[in-house]
Image 1 (cartoon, helix red, strand yellow):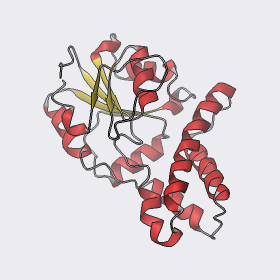
Image 2 (cartoon, rainbow, N blue to C red):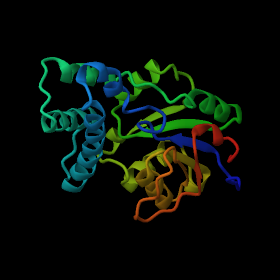
Image 3 (tube, one colour):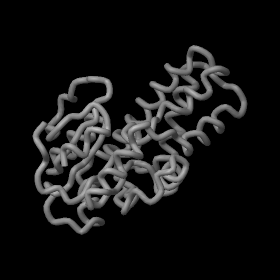
Image 4 (tube, rainbow, N blue to C red):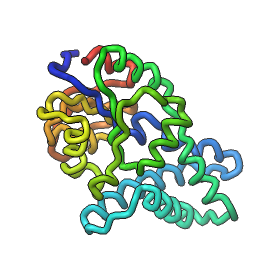
Length: 225
């Protein structure tokens, strides 16, 4: 695998890359039953769709609201209306499990002397809660939220935010890491050296932007930089 050149900073997507977004429904599966996995998949799909639609409509709401609206849709679609369940699921979204490879990979990147940051759709409070719960405190130089620009990824304004906050001039000095193909491709189109974490072996989306590399999990990242 060819190494990336000139990397000064590693910027990570959060949800689906560092944190397992399906952990809440997996945890509650014994009481929800066989619908749990389908609900989780629909919830995640709608969560992303609503960010894109709101960005196109020019009607921004923070990721906590979008996440709740997507969950409401998924629960209603599957006719799940147990009292208190919605609030319990939302509370668990603030306590997502980190993927097993996340901590070691982040520590390895930090050991190279490079800066690390999160660039996420999540609101600041959501990101702080997730990082704290997963025990990843101290592994990031910055937690960057789209709330500062009022639009969601893959808008160029979001990737530009990372450049501004990290005081960088050359987008090619950024290794951007995401397990979401559309996000990795959007970052690549912007000019970052994007690395897609492809845990499932799925193909790229049919949109502009070609990641500089693909890896199977985060443990392979430091070999690239």
